[in-house]
Image (cartoon, rainbow, N blue to C red; front, side, top):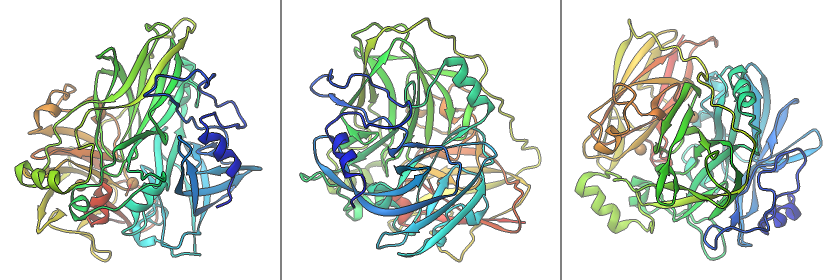
Length: 521
Ligand code: C2O
Ligand code: CU
Ligand code: CU
């Protein structure tokens, strides 16, 4: 509770945190933005809250209750992972590792309830993955020791406490996990990108806050069924933020860290969406940049994008906006109930701004965007078995192939070193579900019977949008839609491995829209 209180107060006053290292995005926070978007965006530094940590030694992460000052002077009770490394203190550090690096992290539970860390998107043995059945009680420890085999990219980590994931993640137990490889290094070099300056991790969340500045997490039964929406949009925990930029290229590593809200993201200048480029998805860089003007981002997903501010002028303002869309919630029946029973003042599919970018400086000559980013080898599905995965609701519960979570049941069993094609079909009277697989990245093969607002973005073959390309661990499946995936269950861990497959709407997950997935050796 007494952690770095002074630093927090500094942050609360809207002044950049005094940090070691070179991470500083906005140079002059005193030049405030417009009245509406006038709070400097919180940019992770080299230590402190969300400080970038490049682990050299073993780490101890203590999950504990603290207080984080959101802008406006309110101090919000917060759950975080506290750690220190080589004389520096961190809260919810942004871990930055290299492909092939070994990581040793001991989780110590100083909460008064169970917890466990899941490494979202990483390819790890089941015992290292943070399966909900490995939840540890108060006062207990869990030891992680693994080698990061993933490609470079923007991953994340968060609590996966059994039946407490939603409330704990809402309270703060989550951060980024950045992996660097040669392709990532080449891109940073080619575009002169610097983490925390021109390469910005940006987590978008919606919260409910009370007058005291506390997060309010009290889902009613309808919200447990549909998902819990907030009415205060936060980017890097900053409400109504702005950031100053120069006339050059910026990389945003967008993470939807919301429990249930889906965003349709555009960069808008004077009412007109600007083109931007999708360069990466959940599992790292795409083969090349894909130009878009909007993209859906569902809970758990990441989208790496480049915004070229090179043709903008000093004084221009650009809003990162979530555009209006039809949430397609349950046809008339559930949608109507949702409308009547939810307390959300900002309904799903509403339009709102996430943050403002203010062009305040001229920058040097633009560097060209690389034509190639990485190599994506398509999974060979020639001999793949097809597995049907049906999503529907019965007796007011969301089901995966008719099942809800039972710790000792294994509704999905696959054989190691085999390739499967999954056909995930969402019922017509349903809602959009971001389906997430632990342990393995997959490739989206096709979307069928997509709603019009999804079909119109699906210009990259077989109904796929730019955000469906490359490697994925979470895929949004709309009502009535069928999404086909290819998964290669090869691994070199010993014995059977147990993971989960679940919906990343965290209220759905906690109400057991989840099944065990066992990979038989
Ligand atoms: Cu980020 Cu099991 O999830
Ligand atoms: Cu995960
Ligand atoms: Cu769901």
